[in-house]
Image 1 (cartoon, rainbow, N blue to C red):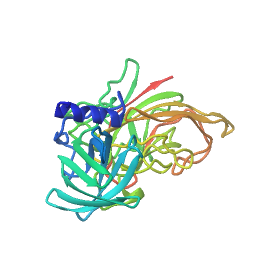
Image 2 (cartoon, helix red, strand yellow):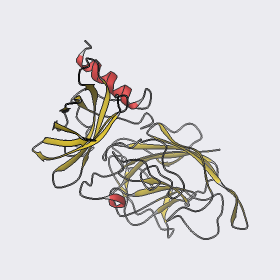
Image 3 (cartoon, rainbow, N blue to C red):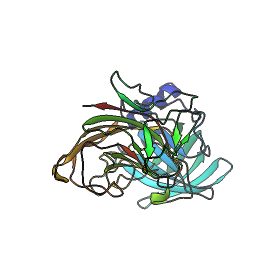
Image 4 (cartoon, one colour):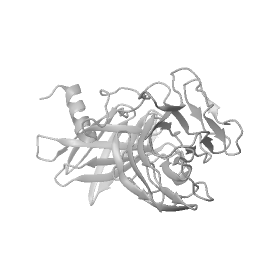
Amino acid sequence: MQHKTLGWAIAALMTCGLGACLYAAEGTPPPAGEPDDGIMGEYAGTYTPAGQNAGVAAEAKVIGEGGGTFRAVISAEDGKPALKFNMTGKAEGKTVALVGKAGDVEWKGVLEGGKTLTAESKEGKIKLAFTVRRSPTEGQKPPAGAVVLLPFEEGQAPSTDAWAGMDGKPCPWIRLESGAMQVRGGNIQTKKSFGNVKLHVEFRVPYMPAARGQGRGNSGVYLQSRYEVQVLDSFGLEPKDNECGGIYRVGAPKAVASLPPGRWQTYDATFTAPEVADGKITKPAVITVMHNGIKIHENVKIDHVTTAGVGGPIVAPAPLMLQDHGNPVQFRNVWIVEQ
């Protein structure tokens, strides 16, 4: 029998993928300054089918849906057969009695917020522990020669001198003592224009359990102010071109990478600018994107301006743009390496 904490760690790594992220030990609370309700988030552990002694890696993404209700998306990809189903319930304090169905099989369980999720049916048992996943590039320092667009130092409000409003006036976004800036007052652009780049950006979507769809932590990162990588609270959802990491009406993410709202997330993108003649694209832009260390796009061609991108004649190079979609999304540690 494995040591308890080691067992959880191994199961978590099996679920996430080695090198892609790091889980904390059982019962570890969310890092300070990342507000939530103490219930929503990720839980990882094992699914043990009935009649078997050995379990397989399993996980739950617990999503707050407002009014004290929660939905747990349960999955065990290596189960025989693989499991994927939803359980729902309403909290009493930090305890949620969960019910759900996997096909015709009824499951019942208990979620102890920030600690454990257990469930069972005639098909087997699930035992999970609360975990904290981090991007491997969170806090990554800009390399020599990088253009630092939003410097990050913990506990110090960042300079926004590299940015301006779309009207050319000083950046209206809020500078926070945490080292981030928060959306307010319209889209912003960099004062400098860019062509081929490697981009690092960190963002945090707010926890808005009562909101739905595009109203839940919406923003966007627009290469050359025209080609968007979507920012949204898509935790626990299937990848689509209008969910987090999607390139709207171009491509859905190839993997699920979103962290819970309130966690810092990262995009690391390699962008090849389009070739332009007389205001028209003669060779499309190409982008590869890593979301929280997981590759979600590889050499995707973008042959048109995505929704809400800057219109008019297409020029290259052009500024980077960050979107105000009416939600208090935060950004920090933004830098570019020109290619």
